[in-house]
Length: 335
Image 1 (cartoon, rainbow, N blue to C red):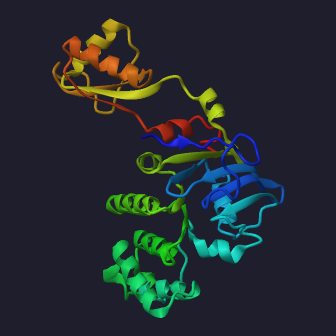
Image 2 (cartoon, rainbow, N blue to C red):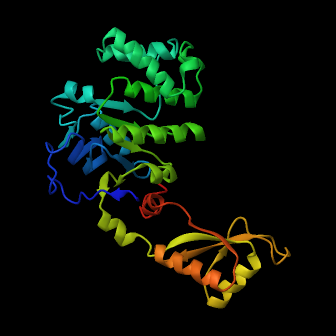
């Protein structure tokens, strides 16, 4: 099921959702400036319990600033925020007790071991000693760092430090989880483990808000998506108005020659894919093309027509997911 793009067109409570209506994240009209730079300019956002929400936008769009506000590390200039039903400014202790925060860069005491890092944070959250030890051991297993538990953090790789940072965010079993580029530095297997873990946490009722540039993976992970542009929430209507009517698909065949001749006969516009055979190759060499297709119905019709014409089609798939296509409609994707 594709992610839902959050609709928050105007500040103030939206129908069926006020700051007290759910224990997830509610943001209304939040603004934050740094001198002359307006990082957030009236952001609205809802992230609900039991769902994974993606926070997407170009560099400089305000994603990290918003996450810092939600984590209680920055005070907004205007607007209001509720995290787990609490205001991080006026009720910071209660909000932080419910919140797990993983910044985009892991910072810790390099002389401490992985176990000592987690134990220190468990103590900061006032977990009883016995339950803290059990929780630390559980998390080290969860993030596959048990064999490095008693090694200093300074010897861990970037990916291992990312996993330790995730464990640190989870040490007190938070109800709201804020993740800023959590997959950065992770190997493919660890990224799969991260997706499985976040889905599991959401199924247990956790509110998960994740910022990432790995949009192909977010497509498989998230339930909802919120786009930021120039410090503002981009509404679905604005995206729909700028989004292309068609998407690019990759069509592959066992016979590149048969495929391209058929496309030429139908007057279709296409271009060779990266795996297209070089000029002079045998006619039955496999290969693929890129072409614009109007939605899933158009893709289904394309396959029917190609197979009906005797073209040995092997696959048809969109180039990039829905989140990536939406992201590319933002004006500042190269900012």
